[in-house]
Image (cartoon, rainbow over all chains, first blue to last red; front, side, top):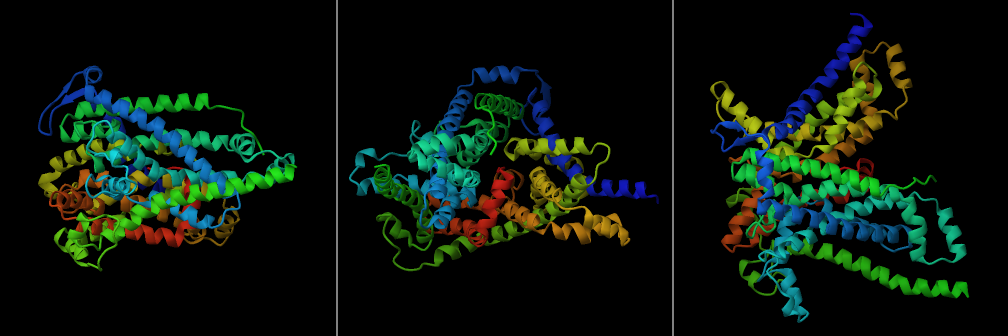
Length: 296
Length: 293
């Protein structure tokens, strides 16, 4: 065998398993989403009818879908803002202030991120439980009985209860991202600033924030995608989309339509809309947050 | 005057900072600790205040979760699925990442960007098409392979876990391989080693740090995964998180809380122990990867 021949054979043998599995379980299913969104398919044994864009037209008048859009956008905006502000605050404090026990805090804040989303759903169901839950009994201790709620049973509140669980889960992850990026800012910048005698807040807005802006940008786009995904998993494990479909988000509604309701084509049309939504919102976010990259 | 101002702001902000850090830590520690305490409580104890400490150590909850609620079997299933998935993943991703980062050939750029695009495809989107795909194969091949080959199969689930983790893992491994010097490959070639030998005996051992990170990261992912397991394993072969969902539903309607919390501890304890051992490495890995499903 010539050397080029054995080289090519080696390359082929190394790549083939990964490429075959990648195409089989990622590329084909993704293509299937787009194909199936054009069909009406009412069940496993039923036949498929090509209906073009009818599934997409039905989405316009589907109140449950519109609810899931509202909930998803609410989660993306509210949760992203709060989480990123929290994470930035903790990270800059842990790096910039000479805080005792910073390793302890790093470990603790990161714990929610390693738990299964099912366990997080369990933890928050225990917190929100109306009679035996931590939250209501805590309000009891503070003599604030008036604030007690059925946190997961109330149609207007349930989505905020889900939001709190998401913030609880994600803050530590973003904290780690910002920690390492703030830690890499040369300390001479801060020394110069402290000679000028500027306040901590000014220091944060005029040094830290501009210098880690590109990290924030990346995490923002990434945040949107992962919130869509995590809110689906959390809603599926915690509320199942209820009560009365009031906590339905993009993908939970897709899943419930496809898998629970056997409307596969309709479910996949939702998936396509979410795909396009994510793609365009990422593009918008990255264009409005665009700034000149600062080199240091 | 400036100095004094600075001292005042210092004294003023420090307690506030600690207050904020400690309250955030408490918000995380209390619920997690509470689950552990609740898992050893007697059922009557749940009707008092949830803030009371347990009366004693009631191991019965664990026995009930493990035996009656099948969590023991699910634990074993999770171990099987997770280990097979890690094996499949390394067997597929290591050679691919090595070749893609150390060799240039026709189409290598295309394949690289193809796999990188896979980073944007999430399991949550494709779970339904994957289910339908397997269901179709099941129906087509039921005469030859018998029922329940593609669905309810722990090895197939592991293979799908591994496949969906490929883009991220190849991406991470490639970027590590790229940093290795090529002297070693040349030396191995002079010594007469073939491509396979060079890869297996020279290059893969050098990639050990990144392999450890990949294993840690994907262990957490596979151990905690539930939407694929829920959809593709409708039979008895459930994994721990799916078993936990069932347990939560069953015990809640029966108002039997102890085993529910015992089940939660069983799912989270292995990841907590692992995390405490390797936390520094893992948090570094997250920053390098920057992707989580």
